[in-house]
Structure formats: structure tokens, C-alpha cells
Length: 400
Image (cartoon, rainbow, N blue to C red; front, side, top):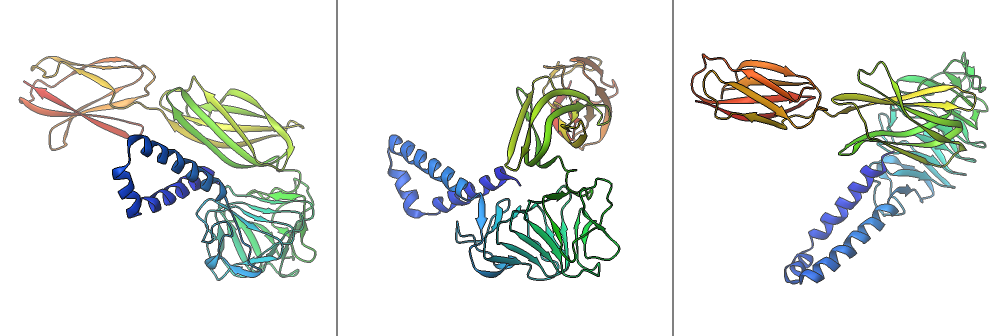
């Protein structure tokens, strides 16, 4: 679930709709600066209110509603990517055909609501929540994207269309998790149970949960819905959120330069037992230079550890160089200086104007370096290409 992406889409859609109004354009051309400021404040407030109200899409129609023809009661239109799809009491939301794609949504089946999968290769890029009294009925094949999960509250139910066959199934990340009866294991909450689990006959009732490993009740300490790293001027900000926590004692946030050997950055207390969304954040003010990795180690009250991530961060600084002297006389050395040591390794290539490489050098964490330009070069204009971490920048060099 990506609330920030959804909010940006809604705000942009609303804003551009407003700008398309000729009368609005005319008003702006004759407004005083004070009036323009007042108008902007009102518009921003309205957009923020609108974006909050569009964070979910409730299907209010009674009977069966196809995913190809959904209407949100909040907006009167189809849902935008990232919003939660709510299936309330009295509504049966069904697949409309084979290869149906539900899109980027979390689906929440409330008390009395039903999600009915009656086709093959039905796909969802999001999580499934079956609340008390909700039902997930699978009479076909449903596939959830990698990293997705299923949570069934006490009183929730997952059932398949057959108790004797394996043609009805649900998979996560191409791994079969739940199928019809016949040679499979009943989901009993034992961490040693092997998927696929049976949902035929009486089905699977909550509380339980499954991720792409097929872990069952009591073995999913949390349901992680996001884990992101943001490169800021003050450091790396790590944000993550959970939808469910069970016996969650704490998180150990770790980082690494090579993605193999990790060390602890900080420890943050968990939410214990909760089914509401919990949000966490930490600013690492002393991150590694260049490329690094962050991961979460979740530790429950029984000291069981579960690893999530990693996420990759690239702080390689490219192009922030002082190049002198420039112009450069034949036989002179070219000085390279950068403002910070925490820049990671970069490659400097001397090229002609056709892009042919003449010489190249590597600069690690040093702040100063001298380059010996070949004395055989003719006078003229050359290029210095600075690259690192997937980024590039060109500098113009004059040789006299």
C-alpha cells in the first residue's frame, strides 16, 4: 500500500482539472497578489482534504461487482492506484474473467462482505485482509505479487470450491499457499507445516496469516506493508509501516556497505500486539558513503528474529568537482578536488568531442587527485566524464 503515491495522483488530477477552467485562468490574470495568495491557500487546503478522503474505495453496490466496472462510493468513479478496496457487508466483489488484474490495491473484506474468485490467473499487487465475518471464496486460481500477504482475523474465512481437488488455489510470488483438499496440509498454526494448505470443506478460519513462505498462524510476527529509505541532506531517513503485529518486541535497524555484513544502527520498540497500522521512522545521521544497504530485523517476545529487506541507497556524489587549471597547458598536471570525502568511488574519463575515451582514472574517498594528461594530445577542447553509482556528469576541459 503506497499512500504517498495515491495522494500525489489525487492532488495532481484535481489540480490540473482546476487549471483547465478558462474562468479560473481569467481570474488569476486580474487578481491582486494578495488575492492570488488567498486563493492558493484555499486551493491547497481543499486538495489536502480531498486527498485524505480518497485514501479508500468502498464498493457500496449490492450483489456482484466486477473489477472491470468498479465505482467508489467516495468519488463516484473508479479507484486510483494505491487506495484500499473496501468490500462491506452485503457486497460480493468478484473476478470478471481469466487473467483479470485487480491492480495495486490492498483489499479489505469486512464483516458480511465476500471476495469471489471464479476464474484463473487472477492477479493482485497488494495485500488481502479478511476481517471477522468476511469471506474469501476461491473457485479458480489467484496470484498475489511478491512481498504481499494475507491476514485472516478471528471469524474470517478462506474456502475453496472443492474439498477433493487441487484445481482451486491461491499463490503468492508463484508459490502455492492455499489449495483445495486432497494431499495437502490443514493449516493448524504449526510453523513446521508445509504449504500448500487445505481450504476445502470447512475452509481456513482465523486468526491466521500467510506470506510467500507459507507461514501460518502464530508465525507471522508482523505484516510489513512498506519499508523505504530516503536520501536527505541530513542523512538517510528510514520509514516503515506494519498492518499487523503479534508479540512484536522491537526492530533492530541494520546497515551494510556490501549487502552481506550488517551492523546495528538503532533499536526501536515494536507495537506488541496490534491490528492497526503502525508507522516507524529513523534518521541515520552517519550513513555510509557510496552504495549501502538497510534491513529490518524484527524480534518477537520469544526472541525469534525475522529479517525484512534490504533496501539499497546510493549516496555517490558525482560531478561536484573543482577542475584546475582550466585551460591546461601541455605537460601540466590536472588537479581534481571535491568538497567532501564521503563521496564513494567515482570514475573520471578523458574523452574527445566524439566521445572516444583517451584515458580514465578512479578516485576513491580522497578529496584531491592529480591527473597526468597525455602530452601527445593536440590542443583543443576535451571532455571529462565523471561517473559513479549510475550517475554521470560532463566537464569541459581546454588544452592549450
